[in-house]
Image (tube, rainbow, N blue to C red; front, side, top):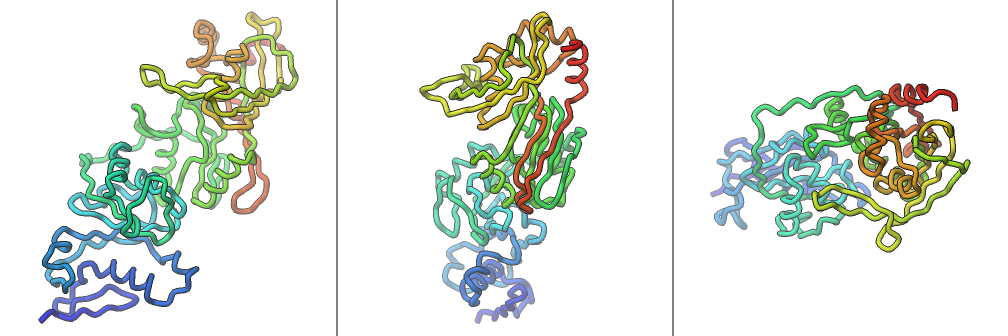
Length: 405
């Protein structure tokens, strides 16, 4: 005779014979609450907690199918409060069995491939897409494609993942990143030149990794947009998924005003110039990402340039411009300027390399591209806000060395 199990709607199912938690009971309890307790439809999408539940191979064996389970096994139970966010360490996911991850508020509306890339830190992207294609990842017991969107309360099956975790994780290097503003929804920083926005390609940790390391309590922290490694200036991060989706919508619809300070070579004459040139991304034989103007294959890209200052008697003539992005294509400002015949000072991808060497001898040792200000509608308050970053000392010192305009 099998021992009886007692189920409490506010606690964990207990085995009467051994007073141990019943294996798999927490999964059953969640499903019981979700489908059979008469919870209003609006509340059904808001479970009180998120958790990682694991079902071991022995629990799924033939002897246990369709019948009662033995009370001799103690299930692995994770603290739900620790794993209610999207940055759980991979060591907490099972390497010998599938794990069931319940989607919390922070991942609502997120694509399943992006969700997996976040929780499976350290797993190659190619492997994540392989387990998606093979059907090893399930959402609510059904196969899904990588673009499927998640909802609060969805149960995502993650197959066994084996990686070589270092015994002692390497510390995240810290760089001084000035903070311009922070509240419950957003963080605005003044990114220094030379700091990549995220790790990869030989970079141990970028801006986002450092920000997360500095805020271990943050349940959600994501880049709203990106800047090139050598570009300095205002950057926006979101602390809530609702804020991220709101700001992304503003970016798509032209509701975000981003302006940059750029120094170019040439005799710039127009006070205001609107440039519309389609841009196409491609990779070189060496695998380097590049962009070129291509009306046939490119995507629409628009930049507005405003004249700020001129040095017509300088050898060569120089112009300081303000660039307003109407679209946000990769390397948009740099490619537009080069195509017009006004290379950006210090640009090592699309600029004049011989001139760059001369600029370095004169004191400008990096690209003269600075995100000077950003304006948008605050995702929580609805107010229009604007944040500015002063020109960094190395760039302002170079302008001073040019003398009077």
